[in-house]
Length: 275
Image (tube, rainbow, N blue to C red; front, side, top):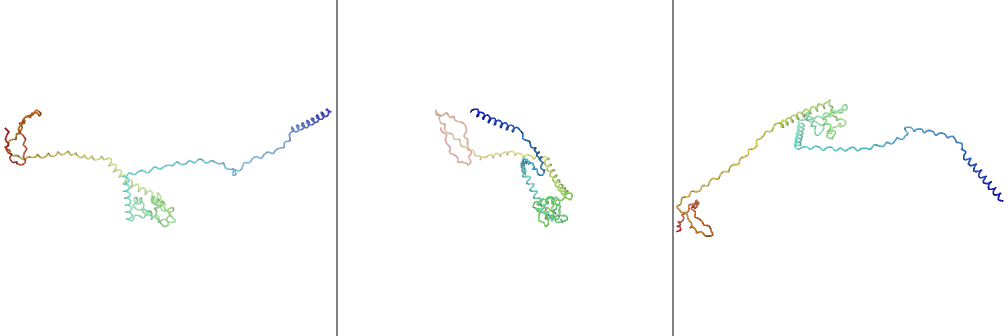
């Protein structure tokens, strides 16, 4: 009875052993490899389609703030000279206008033209412009006045189109030569006169003589009126006996002083001498 179950158990275990060994052998066999196609190489994108590499902007540096220097202080004596020169310039303009020498397109008239040439006729130059020659050559002072709002309105005249500076070869060089000529002449004369004054020794003025103190006039002597001699005897006071308390007073032989009488006095009564 025991042998049969034992054999059955052995057969069952043998079956399980064989089945497991077959499974292990099947795991050891490699499956046939399938050939893999090579991956296509990556083709570079065209330059147009490539995204540009972002470039970081350079740090901006704020420009240094430059503070302009303050204008110089004008001394009072220089300011007085400048004001006198401005007055003289205004007088020259009025004199030239009254003489009919000013025909200007700006207001006030160009003082440099009047000082250099003696007249100002820039309006005539602007009136002469044409469609063929639209530009009028003017002095720098007139040119700057037209572009800063000091030009007088004129029909058909536009500053950007018609107002130009005269070229150096057509009068500007000669204009500046005249300016330098009269300015340098006057400047040199003033410098020479100033240098002569500074180098000339100043005349020494004698110091005022000190007045000696005036001697005060001596007062005039008082003349006393003459007195007539009198026959009166001097009054002699009786001598007093010395007391023990007071020192002894010795009689003096000096005559009493007789004061001059200003008016004649009546004769005094004669006094008797003490016995």
